[in-house]
Amino acid sequence: FVVTPSTVLKLTFSMPVEEETGMLCLSHEKNVQRNGRKDCFIFGGNDVQSSSTWFTVMNPLTEEGETTDYEILIGNYFTGPVNFLGFAQDNDSSTRARGESSWSNIEIFTLPSLNIGLDD
Image (cartoon, rainbow, N blue to C red; front, side):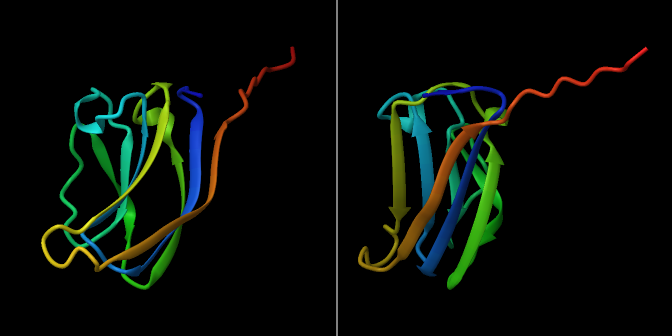
């Protein structure tokens, strides 16, 4: 699919057991860090840095034990084709077995155009 300025990503993110980062990416290439777009979104974690050239930290971040609903106008962050949908859970600073997160109710849609006019 192709992301336009009016494309929306809607989802629910849960983090029963905190890890460093819980991230979702909508990429046109396999290497999201070098694809030139800001097409990854971090929803929670305990090692979250400020946004970078390839990811955006969502506000609010989901804390351990919480579930958060998100609705993001992703067309504000990037536009263009999406060939890969990636889910990542990073936890390389301690035991890699720690961490649990889930993404559900995922919807990607384009807002309809709105034409407003005045009658004479």
